[in-house]
Image 1: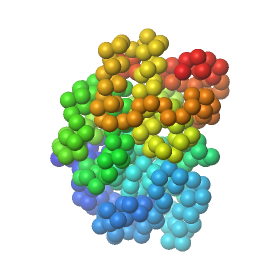
Image 2: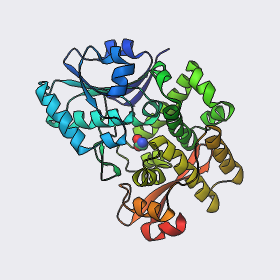
Image 3: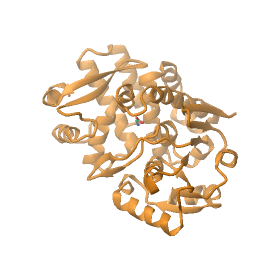
Image 4: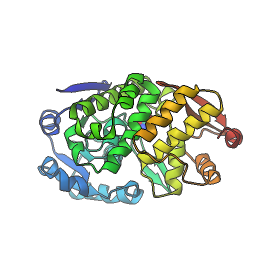
Length: 337
Ligand code: GLY
């Protein structure tokens, strides 16, 4: 079954078969694919018809040096303002492809096929893109909506367990901040069931995209309520800056756990709801202890791009399906966290 979710009047997420959707959605113009070697190996038939630029894998690929190579290759391929860029891959690929498309010749049209769970439920949806600078995540980027995002859950079958689990961190985040029913579904479900049951996974992905779409529709450029989507991310970005042992999703799970502990300490959430969050994160097999020194975490948080002047917005769970956006002065951060 095909589900279509509107992000803005010009950008939609389609949940269904990638091949069929591409045939319908791609414009009859030159298409250049940006992807990575993993996708080229596992989903080769999807990208084979197009000129393809492969970028490196992992967060370290999201660099200015990588962008330089991609722009040069686009010039070599003769890409012009009418070229359509199709990003096919996980969050790293779609962040790079979205940024390249938004800036090449001052912007060309683009779309995504997301091939990871994390991409489907968060990274590829909502129009954020960018690259990292000096270990700080997504410091340079744009808000720019793809014409379409295609989520085909059958493409997620080849994901290693570790990567699938990383995507579940963003699913849990979404359930906590905006979908109590999804949270209950996850409490009843198991990692194995989500891996095996395509219709359950489709339902979960669809719910996450709907929550994200409704938030982005209200605040596309993160001037206010979109900040709630950063639940767990302030701590996660600090972990990712200080340690290369954790993927983004794994760091987000630790970040959510940490912020729930803080919410409990500050009496913002009931003991019962906090315990449900702790139990859900553990149920899906995440590490939960902060893996870096608290001092290093606080220092990295001070450099986070979400900082505004001498204050910072922290997102704290207050119930299942609800969060609070709390502005905390930088000089009060150490006390608060
Ligand atoms: N990943 C958070 C957002 O898209 O705003």
